[in-house]
Image (cartoon, rainbow, N blue to C red):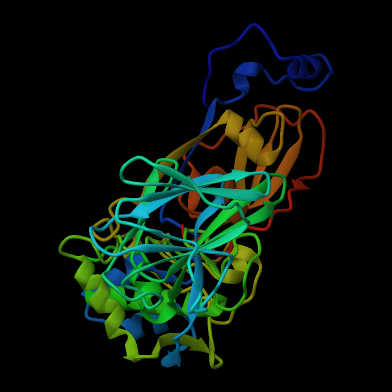
Length: 449
């Protein structure tokens, strides 16, 4: 048992336990933290990116890698010449936008004009002019600041469309648009941007910012899920998985984000122009995207029963991938558990072949909705070795149980392949007998982290 310095002042909740006739639990017996050791990073379902890289180095093709990690699938060309509305700014209260190039122009349209042409813009920005959107109530107030310092207020509204030259929406010199929200600035070269005010639960009104791009190429050029220095077959496998995942999401607009898909780990990391603009390696990623195209309007996709799958993927495992059934309680015939020994090789997975993390007492209590936690233990494991259920006990004898994936998500541990480094042991039976209290939570299945 871990020993802790005794404290003389006891919280009221413990005072009641001490003099209730139950076995005493002292404040000093409440550990300040819990340390976990494990392997892997991410939810573990689908393709292991570390495993894909290792198999590519062994000479496996992209199709062989994908057919290994996704059971019973085929990799075939599918029409992908469609638009994707990608969320690039979620729940914003304001942002600024400007040209990041020395040529070209930016046009501002009132309303969401989608793919319509022949509409006159309400304002055209010159190079280095900037546009700021401020949210007041349920209206957006745009202001243009010119290079010379002049300010022009544009009419308020609830939605806008922004186009710039050099795209399929507006001919002319190539322009790049820089969008700044808070301390973060991202750059976009393709498609167009939509700005919309939506009602957010519990927050009032917020701004949703989206980039409409073509799935076949423009969207995939901006996917930043693996290094562009990786072997070609590993990058191709990632491109095909990303195309498949997006195609599975396309056409199902979400009101909360005004999008088909989030440009973050909630779906897939989309970074606009930054990926293909990487020094030395950006052109390699663009070439990998191009090499997975069958022709100008179709690209290779992972199919199961002739339909694009939800192509989940993750960084690395604890030696065996996880099934969707074990992770989320959802049976997917193509998302079964398969061996993934490459993830345990520190040569391939130097950061996560083995890891150690601690969570504080306060976080543990918050995770399990208990007053405090004196013991955490894995009560069951899945066939893949992941934690199926995690049980916590408080100093008053209350218990709460979570699914392993829910605990991972709340604790921010790298994966569910974990054990306690030093198991916490209760020195006496709980003060009261209770049935574990399950906490119902639906994990975010789309998270690739």
